[in-house]
Length: 147
Image (tube, rainbow, N blue to C red; front, side, top):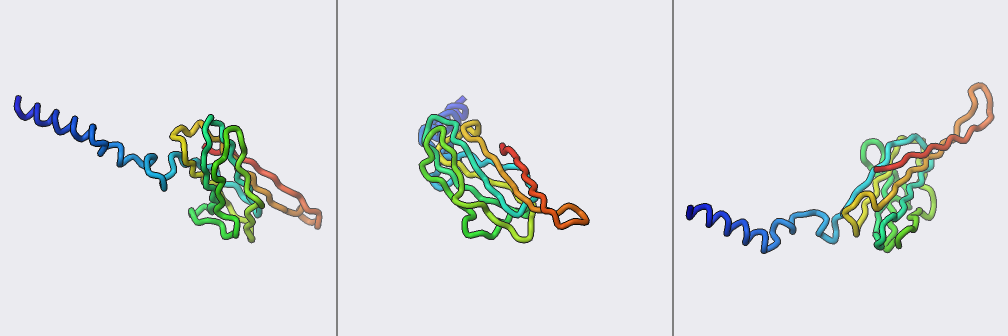
């Protein structure tokens, strides 16, 4: 009986001290609360956007990654949208370019919410091809929603 009381006291002291919650990654200021990903798309130009569907101001960091998980080399990659107000859209200044075309996906790290339903993520990929046997260019546009 004495050992049960000691065990109960240890559990109460641990919970009261906050030691359990301090290990939660969403509590640290430098860790994202939510991270969302899109499917990969082939392209030579990528735009990753996100809508703040919450009632709070959120910070977001956007990164376009190739299928090996490496950031696509571009001066605008990654980019951030600090203090994105509710119902606003986070959009880069310019598309992220890849030459030659690659398969890539968007990673959005969200700070300020623990609910992934507070953000809608989208990847737009553009690719220029030619019709076989001609010099006629075709502009291919693809869109993917992230979760």
